[in-house]
Image 1 (tube, rainbow, N blue to C red):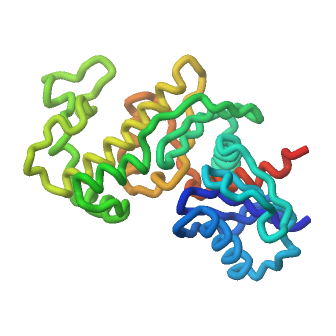
Image 2 (image 1 turned 45 degrees about the horizontal axis):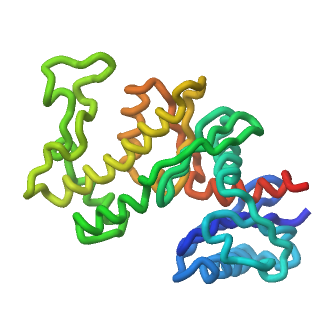
Image 3 (image 1 turned 30 degrees about the vertical axis):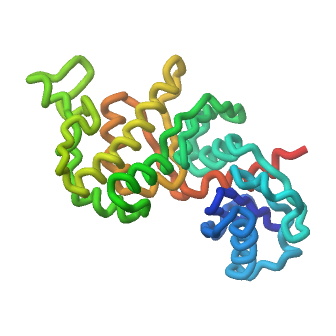
Amino acid sequence: MGIVIGIDVGISTTKIVGLLDGKPTAPFRITAADPVTSLYGAFGKYLHDNDVKLEDVEHVMLTGVGAGYVKNDVYGVKTSRCDEFIADAMGARYESKINHAIVVSMGTGTSFVMCHGDEMTHIGGIGIGGGTLQGLSRICLGTSDIKQVSALAMQGDVKSVNLQIGDISAHPLPGLPVEATASIFARAKSDASKEDIAAGLIGMVLQTIGSASVLAAQGTDCRDMVLIGNLTLLPQCKEVFPALEKLYNVRFHIPKYSEFCTAIGAALAYKRMP
């Protein structure tokens, strides 16, 4: 059996992974001006960097919002498409080794997929994600470079812009410790530093996603959330999600290849094809 290539095609960024003997190999991403250029550039680079011949590729599996721009087989290799939500769930399940979880795909926006064994159901989403962080950072900080925003945030103090329960109550409220957030940006001053604003923006996006995923689990017995997507690479995740775990009595998991889970899932979906 040859290599199955899974490709998650975004509007400008494409992620690619090879599946050989059932194991993901050499994942990476590439950015270009448009999805078609990004896809073909990623595919060619994968073959070159890994010394893979075109005839060694058994199948190409595409997913993501940019996959619709590609109408034909990629470089003549048989090419199929996988629903993005299925790819999210399959990649997250494979990487986390958790069969019953809500998969939280933190992309431009955020989607939620309930995964229970082989049953995978898209249960909704919110319009807050990496796109939100980029847009607000562009307005408030003059940059949409997430790495730069994250570096600023590491020097900031989110308590300088957020109102905590302890700021409005002398005692913890039922189920809410004094350090829990009461209102995001409620303490922000007009002269707030860029560092504090950056910390507030990242905290707002991550807290909102985390809280929404908990709400998505209401009425179910699911207490595990698997986080995937580029936002999982933010160092602030190591602060925000453990705090939410304590608050809501849930478990957040970030797999090793969290940013590549959708591409991995697309490759895995090849085995499900009739």
